[in-house]
Length: 315
Image 1 (spheres, rainbow, N blue to C red):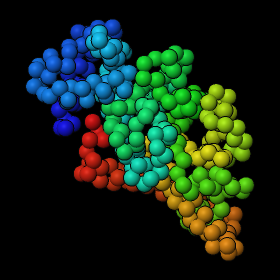
Image 2 (tube, helix red, strand yellow; image 1 turned 60 degrees about the horizontal axis):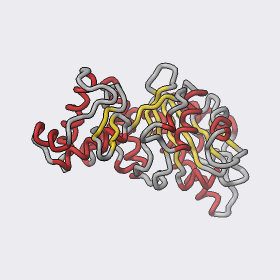
Image 3 (cartoon, helix red, strand yellow; image 1 turned 180 degrees about the horizontal axis):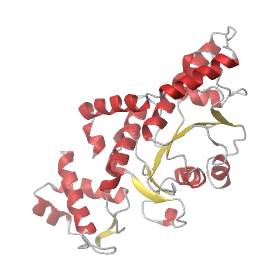
C-alpha cells in the first residue's frame, strides 16, 4: 500500500477538523465516499482511519459510522519534528533489539510544563510505529484511561508520573534491553568504570533498589521521584529509563548505556578481576563525555539511514 496515499486521506480529514467543518461528535464521510472523493482505494482509507483512531482523533462506532473524537489537529504541524524524531527512536530501538514485544514505551513532552506528551499507542511493535501513530496525552487528565483507545496502563502510569514530577525530562525512553536488565537484576547494580563507555555514566545513574511490582499506581509515583538530575534510571529488577531534553540525547544515552552494560556484563562473565580506573580518572572522563556530546550527530546519522530504508517512519 502506498503510504503517501493514506497520508492524503489523513490530511484531508485533518483539514476538515481544523477548519471547523467537522467538530466533535460529527460523522465523517463514509469509506466509499472518501475513496471516490480522493481517488484512493478503500484499503487506503481504512489505513488512514486506523491511524486516526489510534491517535484518538476518530472513533469508529460500528454500524453507526466514524465520529470525530477530539477537536485538535491530528498531525499537528507544530509537533511534526517531535513526532518524526520519536518515531525514529522507536524504529532504531527495534533495529537494535532493545524493545520487548509491545510492552515498552517512549514519550516526549510538547507543553512547557511537560504535562502534555506524545506516547506510543497500545499494542504496536516499535518496528511499525510512524509519526502519525503517536497519541497526545495530558498527565493531569484523570479521564485518560476511560477514553477510546486509551494507552497501555503501565505506560500511562510511569510516563504520566515521570512527566508530571520531572518537567526537565522532556523525552523519556523506557525499555527492557538485555544487558541493562541483567545489570538491574544484580545485587550490585553499579556501573563500574572499566572502559571509556562505562565511564560516561560514572556516578550519573540513579538506581532503584525497591522494585515492588509493575509500574502502576503508587509504584509509578515512587519511580518518578528517583531520577533526580541524572539522565539514566536503572529500574531494579525491571529495566532502564533514560530522560533528556531531546529525543537525540535520550536515545544517545540509551544506546551507550546498553553498550556499557554489555561491556560490564561481558567482563563479569570472564570470571577475572575487573580493572577499575581511579575515581579521578572516571570523573574526568564522565565530564569529557558531557562536554563532547555528539548526540545530535549520532541521531541525525540514524535518521538519514531511515530516510533511505524506512521513510514511512515520518508519516
